[in-house]
Length: 343
Image (cartoon, rainbow, N blue to C red; front, side, top):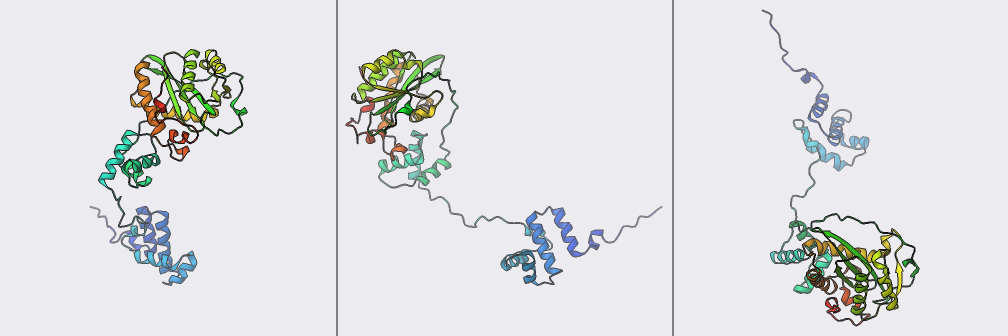
């Protein structure tokens, strides 16, 4: 029977101590930073003959840095050379107030698409106490108060050679100087409906009305409603190149002695203010379950939302004033302007 003699010591134990440290570091999978610190310690015990100043000069270290890792080093646990968490032991927690949280949650639930600065303005007006926008942001993040967003399909527009809005170089000093008009096409519940929208360039006052037809007659009706609501104080109007703004609409423009401008083809930035309002209308009203195919039912609900938009909702571009409050500085508009309708 042949006997197999086993070595009394493992081959790894016969290697020099610093080589064993390096081999152990490789097997443990030390990071580059920890491996570099291990070399500092090996250099300290070998070449430098335990001279810390020589180690610091050789590796370009600050003495405090090397002293720290030399104290941390443990030959039986090389993982101590790894970079630890820099998270402080005592972490400041959010100083939450249940009453403030509930108030912010209520306001945010009612206005999911409003920014923290708009909600701050509403909160201070409603509860007569200061609150930081950062506090509102933390409440939104803590309770995940975010709206569900959906992508909207974009529809191509037909271009025509018209008098372009870029020719209007003058500023818009008063409400009514320039009114932007546009339309939103809706495909919902197997029906097709159209919302005509308008925004004043100066004050951001907005108006909208839904029709069952996309012809120029409803557009002419919308223009006359707008003319009535603004007290016949409209000077210039701006539209895109859609067919709804032709024929009867153009005739109504001439009858009311309005100067008309068109957007450049495929240039939505020419009507940026109204494009932004249309997006707000979709996000904050249409996608909240307020659509109804019957204009007689839909338009009163739309009017209620317009009252809030014009007289309650702060507008960032207006220094967080409401459009109605801003417009009153240049026009004597009644506070119920948005709810006025022509018989």
